[in-house]
Image 1: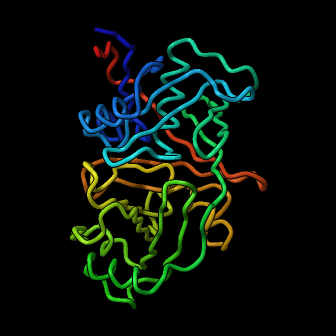
Image 2 (image 1 turned 60 degrees about the horizontal axis):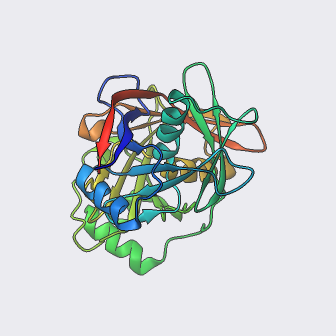
Amino acid sequence: MRAKRFTLVDVFSTEAFRGNPVAVVHDAGGMSDQDMLGLARWTNLSETCFLLPADDPAADYRLRIFSTLREMPFAGHPTLGACHAWLAAGGAPRGEVVVQSCSVGLVQVRAGQSRLAFRAPPLLRAGPVEEPLLASILTAFGLHRDEVRHARWVDNGAGWLALMLDDRARLLGLAPDLSGLHGVPIGLCAPWPGGDASFEVRAFIGGDAVPEDPATGSLNAGLARWLLAEGMAPPSFVIAQGTAIGRAGRIHVHSDGTEVWIGGACVTRVEGQLLL
């Protein structure tokens, strides 16, 4: 039996158990793809991730990320949670920022006084959502076409598409039937005038163990690039997520004019050994 260091990190909230948990396996060498997918299905979290030695001379470490359905090329809250766990275990970056290698390439993560932030990767797919797919989504969510202000692809490696609604209360009241949208990552957002965040977001993946994600870095990174490019958000703003399911995710977005950074709190909740 092999023992590996194991960390469970709460990401995107300072309130205990109200962010998005991610499992991190340290020194995951020797684990097969099936081992990793099997563990991800066993933890039953939105993602489980695995720290490995860097496979790129520019990186500090390599990260593999698995949902209960498949390996993910990129995901935001695992990126922050894994970086937090790596630093807490004694990891030291060679430069001013941590450089993570994953399937979408190199991702920079920088540490501030109260949160970590990753540089949002570029969109791999943008533009309008195809009408047949949009029609299926509207049916699943019980929405009318005139309730959707925009429908856009915001895919940065995780496959996300996004719908923007005008009404936050309508967004929070949605109870979708995702049975016909297996594996399709769908984000919905609405402005929140007068709230402690500029936008409210919900995220769904049909067929996943966690059909509604509590706080989603990759989706919000894609949304941020879109909102900023279209002039629908200021250079710095906050996104709320998880409200509808009793969470309190807060995702901090900052654009320095060149890059977009997606940040949030990371708090270790469980440390121990994983026995294989």
